[in-house]
Image 1 (spheres, rainbow, N blue to C red):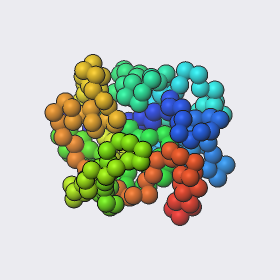
Image 2 (image 1 turned 90 degrees about the vertical axis):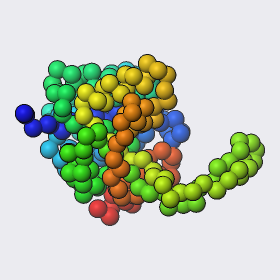
Image 3 (image 1 turned 180 degrees about the vertical axis):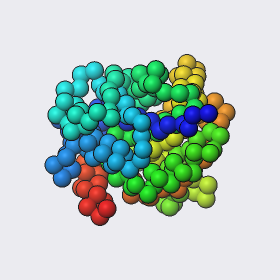
Length: 233
């Protein structure tokens, strides 16, 4: 049997509206580099990926200005309205290049602080797992459940002993991930990450503990924090 290959998908079709910026957050700059360039270079330089697919918004006009657009390892396709749609679009675009047994790693475009050690640990841990897995970090803060309102009112304090914060990359076999996403979307399930789609299909991934500084740039304050984290690597 041919040894399974590693493929990378970095969905970049989102508009990042919470950043309140003039462009999608993946095209904001940290240390004069696009976040998307930082993310892709850190991943592709840290693991032996056979190739990479980046789903883009059909109105995207920033991609040609990136360093990544000149990288022969990277292909692009048109993304969808939601993350799950974009990932499924990328999987379909890779269909003629990928074997069913190959591994696909999906990583957030706006998560540039991925550490090479975490990536290596994820791949090594998941390679022999029957389902797949994802980087995650145990919840350290006290968690409150609130009743919606103004102001929000505490209903209870939640036991955090079994709670983890999902990170990326998330790593699954090609055929399993395609089937799980198609099933979840066809059933109208809320798919917030690849793991949730796989869980809906009845398969339970493994959690691989990662660094808590693998942050996702979501609001303006995250830009400075990500820049600081990257300066420490």
